[in-house]
Amino acid sequence: MSTQDTLNPSRRQFLTGAAGAALATALPVAAEQTTAAKVPVTRGRKKPLNVLFFMADDMRPELACYGSRFHAESPNIDKLAAAGVRFDRNYCQFPLCNPSRSSLFTGHPPHTTGVLGNTTGVVKEHPEFMTLPRLFRENGYTTLRSGKLFHAGLDDPKAWTEFDGDVESMHPTQVGRRMDLKREQIPMPDGVLPVLPGDNQRAAHSDQILVLEGNGEGAGDYMVADRAINYLRQCKDKPFFIGCGFSKPHSPPQAPQRFFDMYDPKKITMPTDFAAWPYVPEGFPTAAIRMRNADLFIGRGASVDEAREVIRAYLASISWADWNLGRVLGELDRLGLRENAAVVFVADHGYQLGEKGKWSKAGSLFEQGTRVPLIIHMPGAKGNGRSCTRIVQSLDLYRTMAELAGLEAGAEIEGSSLVPLLQDPRATWERPAYSVWSEDGKTIHGTMVRTEQWRYAEFGKGAANGAMLFDVHADPMELTNLAELPKHKAVREQLSGLIAAYSYPAG
View (spheres, rainbow, N blue to C red):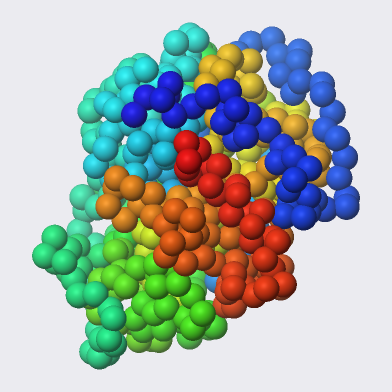
């Protein structure tokens, strides 16, 4: 699949421009809005802008600064959000590592990249694509990465000034203390799919909680922070793009003891739609829920007590990742580099923590599976210190970072620059966000569109396998599917038209 085959001027205009008058009902815009100032945020910069680009894995916005349901203690990310612009409604393009990261770093959605699973390398499929770090490298930057930026083993060697061919492991190299769960035997209900043969090994360790010794020295994310700190020291006198990819809170959950001590599992309130096993709520299409968990509680049910312990471990993993991020930011400040560095924090996709019985991201076109944190601190941006509630996408980061650094993104790059929102977080912004899912890594089986008021998803072309519609303000937990109600017919038709143009542009 080539860019020329999938992208044309009319499609590019659809993906990057405003939705248009036909979408007025489907895309209501908040009354409080202004047009962004057109003064470039890069004006007057005497030397190239440095970039420190943080990524987390499997992290939904379960952070104090987002005021989320459980929320982790995240003082360093919170400080970054207070200094920059916190995007409250940012969405990934695919709830799985490789497709999401491939989209973010190429500026193309999954059906353009053709990457719909965790085994296809976007650079191998599209050697003509200019990835974001390679754009910086070819414009004179030293580009270095520590940890997981692209998916493991599917990196872009030409993107990095130094490339050692591997990434730090998700699993710790040091021995920690395993926290055993009771592992209650909860009968499997009808319709739940058993563990696949290939999942047996993952099922054995995925939800085994590991308490690391000390500060986690020798474990993956600690080493990622150490390497990023060393890179900052090496590059303090030259333009740099440094990527720092943490693997937590990806399973298996792990952190030093003091991060577990921050949370009392007895005080964790389970979501309204929690269940021991994955289930399809009444009125929902069967295709909306994968009946096999892929990350946690693989092949077994989750009791309330076990679920609380795993959520606690998920939060502790976030807090440990936050602590490691703070170490890197501390070195950025110690070296006096903050005032000439754009700092980005984003996650690859979201996660479900027992909502509708689901413990993973795979297949989730719900809010929890596709909404991800995004924080950008750009020195001098007028919007710094504020939050933005406009609908944005991780796909937008390519054009954003290129514009901030004064680099030319190719005309074929999709998404929209977020620079106007960095200048004015309430600026007019009428663009929806999209996420897709593929069950087999070859065909799009589901597409979600998110607007200011609505979340709509179709499964199969033309909703052949059902649809979901939620009023996100009235029903934030997505408990009631409105797709079949006659009073929402017009809204559904408009949103369905957006999905058809996005996922099936040829037909």
